[in-house]
Length: 306
Image 1 (cartoon, helix red, strand yellow):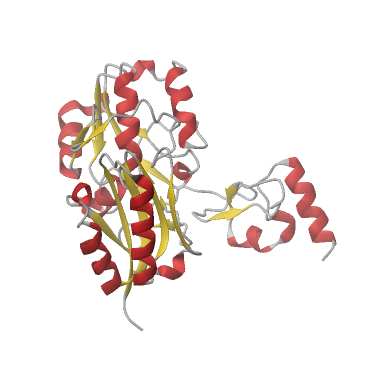
Image 2: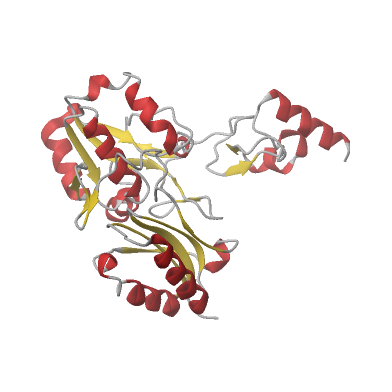
């Protein structure tokens, strides 16, 4: 069996006919045996696909044939097509669902008015120069930050990216508006949009980490400002930088044992929450729930049924 890989990529660029690009991308992936998830909008493309390494290389070459995608960077990650249930290629209003498609402006150079890109080395230079004045602002869902985040980061109280606009407009982060703010997210795409939303709302000095946590972790492992594990959106659920020296930030919701593994709540009918559970609690029906009272009742009933 050949070597398999996962590709992560995005490109903000004007797309005149997203439907045509969607059909082309779907046919291309099917012909190469790739699986994963691709979103296309008039603002660009956002994808994660996995498969045979040679198929991935052909995919990169063919996708870059589209003029707007020519400069697109592809990140390689461990995994395969089996990490995804199927191939999904869809047209959406936004390639990152902030609920602000009309506010986002994109040209051939990317997002207009977004935060300044910093390399991992430049992040350290900024911190060395400005010290505790620098604020790291988590651009992910708060759940993801439970297992890993930048040291002393501000973690907004959001369950989805759609919650960010109300959160920014709430006034609770106005104290940051005159400080250097480094926004960060998994691969960088959410911060492309978030940083522009922040600047539109009066945050004066906004940065984003070029390549996101992934690139920072590749550069500094666990020896820099990042602490813990990185939540990922495939069946691996999380990944670590370095060889076993990642800080353990997450804890089981029931017994508080250290864990960085999320599980779906056993109450599949009415709860879609992912929750941190240790192996022991996850393996017992009575404790394989998110902690809500109604979900605990469902778990107890299922456990009683044997």
